[in-house]
Image (cartoon, rainbow, N blue to C red):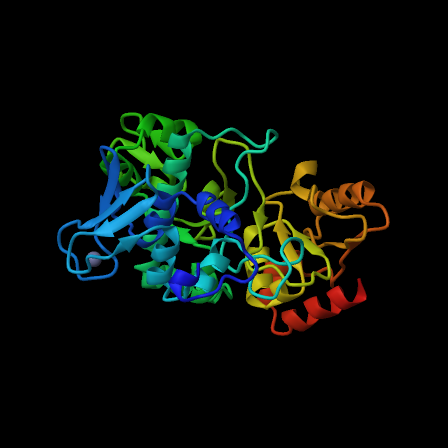
Length: 377
Ligand SMILES: [Zn+2]
């Protein structure tokens, strides 16, 4: 490590290698290179580090390495890629991969500000094939690009109280309804599998897609014209949920045809004061926006159902601050959580006229009302 001219805290060579092994380089690269696609054994795309007109950026999954044959003539491994792309030093790049910062003790209480690599597929989690993961990642990328290039949608997000920074941190997206099938096909990903996951549907003759959208040809996108929130584990997207962008659009939230996974907060606190549980992804995004990730872990159930394994990390001394919606389903979920965690789970209460955090965000003094509810819990 000293050869890099930078220390690595207390991490051993072995720990560094295992951090590197926790991230697939093609997943990481796809985040910076939306044009990345598979060509035989390697992946190729437009280099993000110079003004590239022909795809010069190459990634080799087998050796977990990358190289730009264009103007840069640069390359390396996942750490080098993070250093270049994020403009950080070696130590910081390791932190971003999921290691502890210098001086901090690894383990509970510390988490990378970027999505960290976690061990894949504990047996209770849904089995996603390599192809499934590539498809979900690709969908997440194309939606992210669509949001970042759509000023009207970014303004719509801002109107809901979500800043560009939070949108980028959570890799939020927008589904135009016109790009996904073409993009997946172009990346040589399996459209049939995308249908199975619930991302695409066949358009029967004479039938309009959701919202009367006929622009997608013979397929239509399930999440068409919705703001898309990806649920990520490490660098991988494991689930997508879409929020309506118009009042008339129903339902308000739409998920995929696969088991739901909860949305977790990014940038968890050094020393957590508890876990705030909300229903909707936007409730969580707002709490992140308001800075609560500094003191609390955040978890959005994406509905009112939850699985025990989602809360498997909750220790006997952890507080669970339940902020599900103030309606029948939300109360039932809160009651169930409190039954599961007697003496640990507390129900947050705020004035009845507000159903959820989103309602509070729209109220002039909503943040204060929320702070009071949290304080009183
Ligand atoms: Zn280059």
